[in-house]
Image (cartoon, rainbow, N blue to C red; front, top):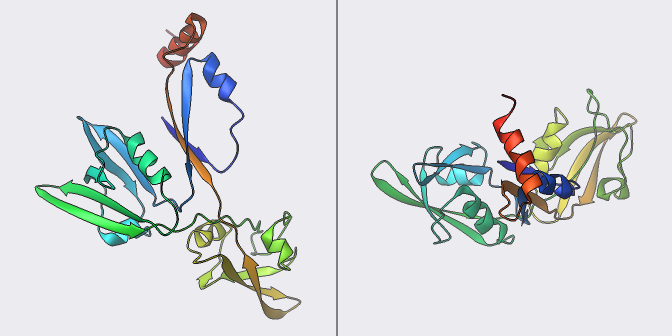
Length: 219
């Protein structure tokens, strides 16, 4: 089972008690929104957003992944490991089979930026936490119109826009006291993690019992 977050993981001891191990992979590049599943010994693309660079390059859901950066994946986690080794500016190459044809796609990886701007339903800034946006002059009560060239119509758009930032700065277009203004924010590169839960071969008998009870459920 896969999971991901930008926050620390406080529950390693809980996994150990259940006889499970969480392998964590840090990503220093923007997520290409690629998810994979294993079927009949093959690693298939099971999720790929239409707005992603990999989709634009030609990859599609259902493609069988033959290699990631010329390494053959044996499981979906192998794809995550390969991408986790990459740095901004490096090129990701994915070789796939679609039907009877083999294809190769290349995309340049960008930095994974983090920009947090809480908004209310009217796109007004509220409860702005300490960080680069506040340091640049953004304040509670400002109405956020755009981040770079992307119009903001809901709070989720902030996260989407952060993933599209080129370089290390972003231009925020706001309205304050009835006047339109622009604020330049230095956006640091973020690090996310992705992981997979696997059975811990070193689990104690007690932990294995807990694990079996969880996996099998009540009789």
